[in-house]
Length: 171
Image (cartoon, rainbow, N blue to C red; front, side, top):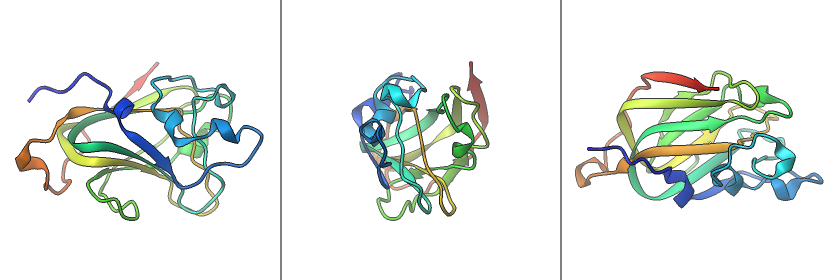
C-alpha cells in the first residue's frame, strides 16, 4: 500500500476540550491546528488554546478510517513551549473519553519547531487525540499534520498495536 502524500488533517474536523478566554480567544479555535499553516505565533491566529483545566485535549476526526503512518506537530514559538511537554498522542476508532490507545508521547518540542512521529506498520483509526494529562494544564497546538492511507476493509477493526519507530525534528 502506498502512503497518501496528502495531509489528511486538512480534510478532517477538529474539536477541543475548551477554548481559552482572553482577548485573543477568537484565535484559539481547534480548527487552527489543521489550517495548513505552521505559523507558530499565537496572535497570528494559527494556533489552538484551551483554558487551564484537567487533562485538556484536542481531537481530529478524519471522517473515515485510515492507517496513519506519521503525524507532525508544530509547537508555539512566542510563549511557553514547555506546555506541550508530556502530551500524549492517541489514535483509534473510539470517540469516548480519549479512549484510544496511546501511540506516543511528546517529550519536548522547541518553540516554533515541528516534531514528526512515524509508525512503520501504521496505526488504524479515524480519530487523532492529543491529550495533556494532569491538573491545571493548558494545551496549545500550532499545526497538526496527518499522513497515511485509507484503511482496507480488513484493517478497520484492528487493535492499535503498532510501535513508534522514530522521531524526526524539522528545522
